[in-house]
Image 1 (cartoon, helix red, strand yellow):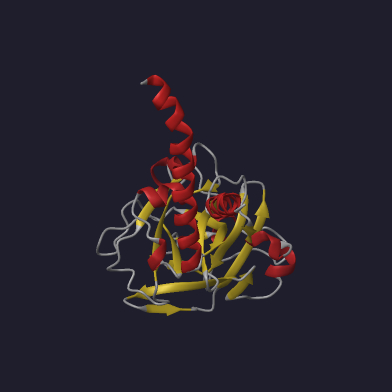
Image 2 (cartoon, rainbow, N blue to C red; image 1 turned 135 degrees about the vertical axis):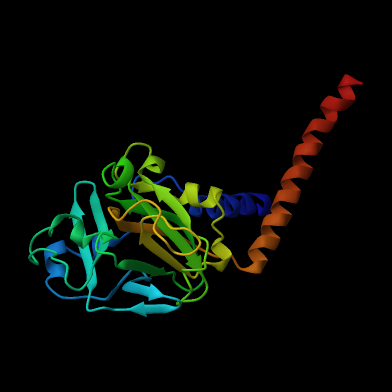
Length: 256
């Protein structure tokens, strides 16, 4: 019975952290219809414990609201949050807006940022973006991803991970989690995730033009196991190995 309980616990823990869902478990468009949400001006929103904030980045550790606001999209291949900076035409409140203006973009020479804050006691287990298409500069729109335990990191000196439409397997929306993990994403130091349009060098200079835009669609999170859970997992694995070895012993003796 003890072995069975540990096997179940291991399967559950592994399963909660496994990416591969066709859509995010925490889908930001579940907040409501775009017309209802966009009828007001929101700098921040919270979906299933994940906080979403929109900013304009001015360099160093400065985040400025800039009279902008989060903009919700929920169309075919256009799911999630973008950011509408001051002076941009994002369309009437009851429409999808004016094209790329209401996505997370770098078209207006403003460094728009969307920041996600994870719930306490949980870790990120999947990350989804949308509307990252084959248009834009060099026919391959890009974005840059950063992570930190600081709510106001210095993005101009941080190394980000650039992802592009090419990483979405030909789709306009998909999970980028596996790609980020393969390129150095460290969830331990990731209370906060930061999304930015375009790609940048170590000095913060744009590398591929200013026609890059996309939406932050949603995430999955998993509960961080308590230390005693790891102990149970270790004991369970040890018992499983012991049982497996004992099952092989009669066969080994017969062979001799």
